[in-house]
Length: 289
Image 1: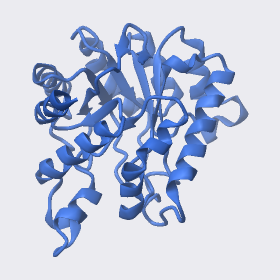
Image 2 (image 1 turned 60 degrees about the vertical axis):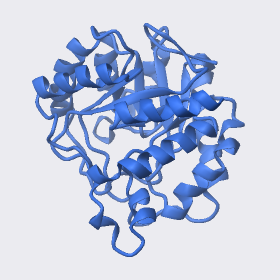
Image 3 (image 1 turned 45 degrees about the horizontal axis):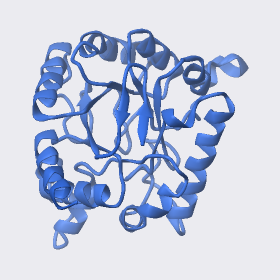
């Protein structure tokens, strides 16, 4: 299976590692560490040296409770990094739900649009004339796109998480979103799906998505797994204390475990903070296959 993107046809025979580049002051794990253009570019270079197959650049935090970021601020954070990152020899993903950011990123040579809203976001201030992310992607001749499931939105998603059996709900949502893009002319080879670990789900629901990941693959699209440093992992390994006692930066071991389990269950792309360690862990998995 391949993932078609703007400049690369990514071979998914073996799982690929997507390195996270947060150009933000407030991301849940590494906010502020790579907030300047120079720091973000140095981080990009280090992730590529560590073995990242893809870089995912984002300017807006989507942690629980995060407020939305203005269009101008997001463009100011992302575009200077993107201009240089597209020269690093790996596919570049831009983590954004705003159509104007998508359009600007693709114009600069981005390969993938990674959308936590799965193309549902609308600029309410623009009304009926608002540009749609789906139209931006459909107008591009070959960019890749990752559609993620999110319950509610970042400010409210953990205030009232999903109810019931989460797997069929996520499956139905993502399958409908992918079909919607195909109806606009986007070839299915360009589409990746992401169940949205932690985005409006309980701890039990998140682990249900991992345990039953094979059911999500029945839609016929490759899957991205984003378990890196998520609070659900802290809850499992710190059962005698609140989640907050295990800082996000201290969740390496459970993150690697979840990444390997996701890959073993068929995930094609692992979106991670700790690239070097994830690459090493995947080599062990690949050695026994």
